Image 1 (cartoon, one colour):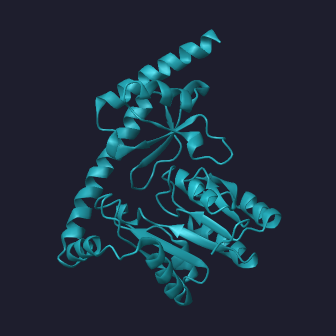
Image 2 (tube, rainbow, N blue to C red):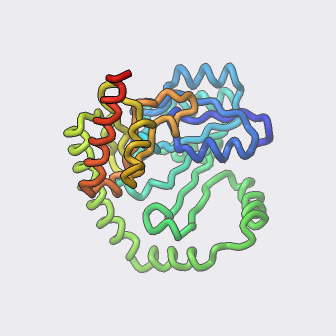
Image 3 (cartoon, rainbow, N blue to C red):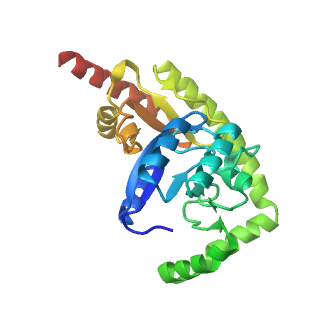
Length: 281
């Protein structure tokens, strides 16, 4: 869908690997501020007019890194703008199965006219199960198959067979029920512990694994991450996800990895050290 020199809109913040992949394709990246209900529509429209982008890449639900979910009114207006400006949309929906009840999807509202929907089982089953799917315009499917064969030299038959078996015998459904319950507990506990530590949760996610939280006292997330790394605890600082580097005060937390006291102990020590350093300066 892209040629070198094209412009692509992304959310700010967004999944950091979107930026790396797009740069590898030698395209221009323009970030649009993201809100708890979707992209800032005024900024989105300005970017369409000013930059004439070819593509917009986003997570509509369980947004990475914020955990936010697109509101229906925002989705409808966004699609109207996309139609007016001949914009194509890639909706990365790999976290969909974390939801108990499906949130709005651009692909569903649009009927795949200008939206490509991407799904995967790698988050719900295993990172080793690199099996997913694409829903797109019918005329795009054969070229996508050709591209897949040219770049992967195969079909991942083992992973596909495992996924198929789990889907048809009911194992996957039972697995999701258990996993969602565990993640809901982990989400509640993580948000509670972050509150005790003085962090402000940007929005409470409906489901999923991510919490986007603001550090207190204008602390720098990169500084916190460096101090925690010395204790073998890895935090994801906000500016890793921000094309404009406007998220210096945020950290992304994966609730499935936040069930150890060591995480919060390292966070508190890193915050204390960073605060003390700021005071000395």
